[in-house]
Amino acid sequence: MNENEVKNAFDNIEPEPGAQERMYANILKKAAAQKGNQNVEENYPAAQNHRSILMWQRWGSLAACLAIVIAAGFALPHFLDRSEPDDPPVFVGSPFEDIDSPEEFEKLGFTIDAPENAEDVTYCIYDGTIARVDFILNDHEYTYEAAKLNGNFSRAEGDAVGSTTLNAKYDATLDCLSPDTWRAHWSKNGVSYYLSNFDGASEDMIADVAELLIGQS
Image (cartoon, rainbow, N blue to C red; front, side, top):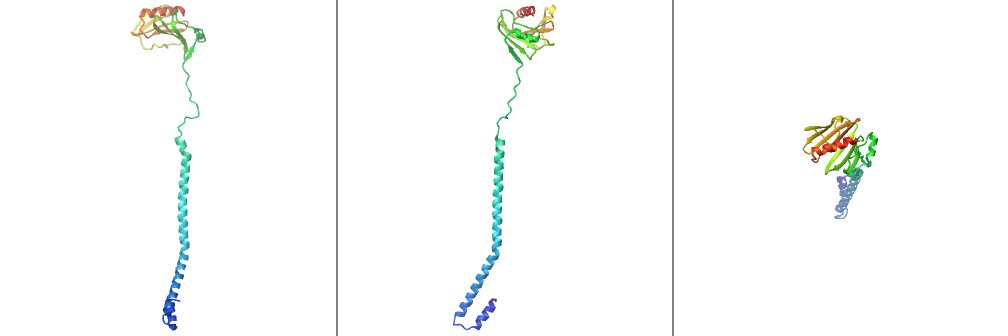
């Protein structure tokens, strides 16, 4: 029943004065209320569905953020961990083997020793093949070395600026490398010997020491 039909029906009724208008207004008011409720019921599922979608989107975003935080929590310690690896460092051994006496040179197939009256004498084997004796004599420091090797293996490196023959039998020579550096060399029974000085001993002094050691070798 539309509004016109309702109006015509009320027009055929003869109620008391004013009643017709009140009844007509109440019917229209009730019809409007029913229509409003119907619209709400029809739109409610869509509104509820829209709210559900928003809630799922919100919780989905929160879950994604939480996953990122958890992943960062596991990964961060690996980036911040600057501790040393568990494997211990490997140290390379020293080429010097300190020994207590010249008798320990015998494993090299020969022995050497400092001259008599030498002070602060120390012994070592360098690189497993070179016997070395360091000592002080007449206030000068010397290094005495021997090995079954060819070439210059002494501490005194470089070319000689002057050379003197000490003992022809053993090809002994004395080389001057600089005003403060001397190197004597000789060979005997397949062993090469070197005597070095770096603190300015005179030529005569180192020549005398070399002669002493040639006699011992």
